Each structure stands twice: as C-alpha cells, then as structure tokens.
Length: 62
Image (cartoon, rainbow, N blue to C red; front, side, top):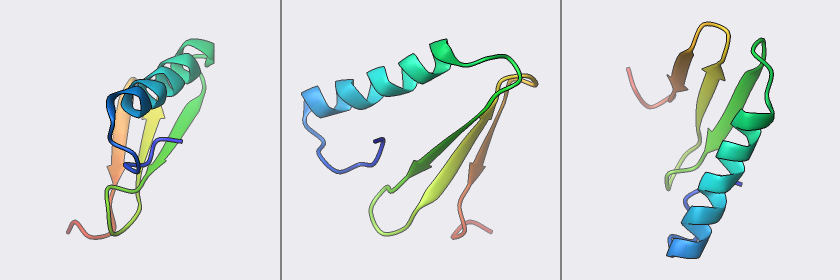
C-alpha cells in the first residue's frame, strides 16, 4: 500500500491518507509496520507509538 509504484499525485495522496488513517486508528501500545519498496529492495519502517520512536530497517545500510 505504501510502495513507490505509481508516483503520480493522486496515488501519493492515497498512500499518505492510508498511513494517516492507520495512525489515527491505532492505540498507544501499537507498533505500526510499514514495508516499503523504494525501487530495488524492501525496507521496513516501524513506528512505536508508546515510545514515539521510528525504526528504519534497511538490509543494505551498514
């Protein structure tokens, strides 16, 4: 739902709305996982709402 495929404005707005809706509907103790494919590999962003921390996991970064 949040991959980079389709970079025209309506699709970008649709992805942003999807993320915002999930954040609004979440509970404080929730973890939100956002897999994302920027082009050639997958990365993962994890939002920990309780600690207000965002983790960015990319196997290509060292």
